[in-house]
Image 1 (cartoon, helix red, strand yellow):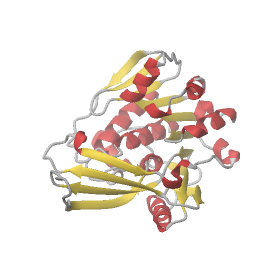
Image 2 (tube, helix red, strand yellow):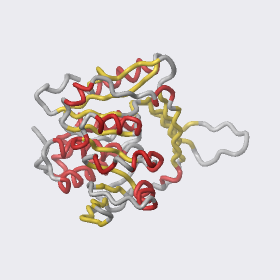
Image 3 (cartoon, helix red, strand yellow):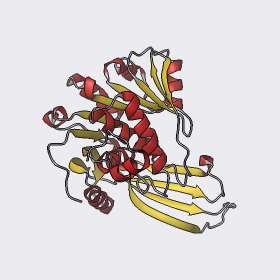
Image 4 (spheres, one colour):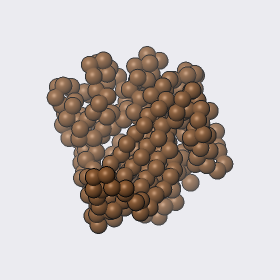
Length: 300
């Protein structure tokens, strides 16, 4: 895929890049029984790479900061990043194994996500570092996913205004709580919201809270400012839908959308992304989104 024009505003995503191996099995298994795989797919994954891919598919320019291994899996991840069109000059290779994500889906005839189990072998994926500060300063927006260790250094560089943090519940500790008021936007889910509430955190920072297939809330200082309805869609696989949501949200605010407009776009994109098996297989392009809703903030 050809690179996006350099004049487009740059989005930087900091997070993991992985190879996703998705398998579907029948009901079971029974103890000590070999379980045949009914179907399987392999493709680019990882929360960071998923979000970056959605930015690119919507017409944006995105550079990924990540860490992968020097193994053959790392070669595969780099090739996949090139195929999608994600800039990967700042994907660093370390001695060791790349991140591998195995998703096991049970054939149930229902859309119950409790029948999906995700196993992450992070490998060197935890070794993400920021690198060149000039590159970071050149970005219009920076989205951080699954890499809490980089939040404080980004804030120390004075980049909080442009920083969007994808907040997982396990990331919340005292040191991070003390600095969350400096970021531009926080994206989390019900579990993350619960941790913030239990810590009695009162933030004057916009908080976007997803609730799976339910409404998305825009919150400020603990109060719901707006609830954006989820869309009705036939879900095939919800893997990576949250990453697609975050990528679309980051893309939209970078393109000049209001937070309300950006959330509405992200809700639509996340719903559309669940149409196929695999985190990125169902991610919609700018043309597909425009055809679905005529969203006017998309370029082109």
